[in-house]
Image (cartoon, rainbow, N blue to C red; front, side, top):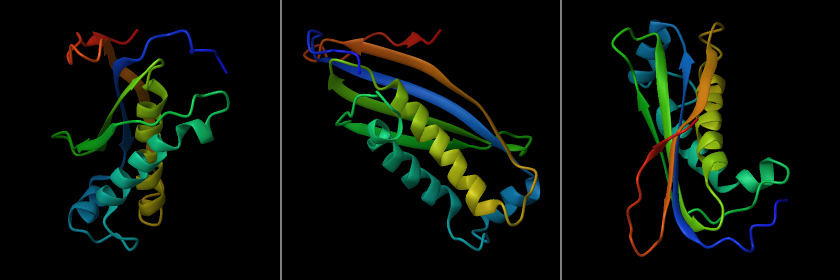
Length: 149
């Protein structure tokens, strides 16, 4: 692991996004709560948050972090051909939470895939990426959001 003991604890936030492409009929089943395994988006949200909390156990050399906030949200564009997934993770620590946000998005997408695979064999997970991150002195409470490179 990288030694971060010399770095100051700062407020840090990361936002990640991704998507799962699926058939509109599958989306109809999800919205009608007709998927046999249960409420897809509620389960995927919970799975994403749980995964973010365990990122340090899943990725070798990733610092185990006591994240203070994680949220996972879903959006369906007008074309109804995909579910867009966004995750935000926050912490006050000497290292960032990008991996936690990315893990939340990835596991949320995998959960949707798992729950819907019986009705849609053509789903595709993709475009998982870091959207933004910021850091600031904790007392300030606000930092400027910067776009990820």
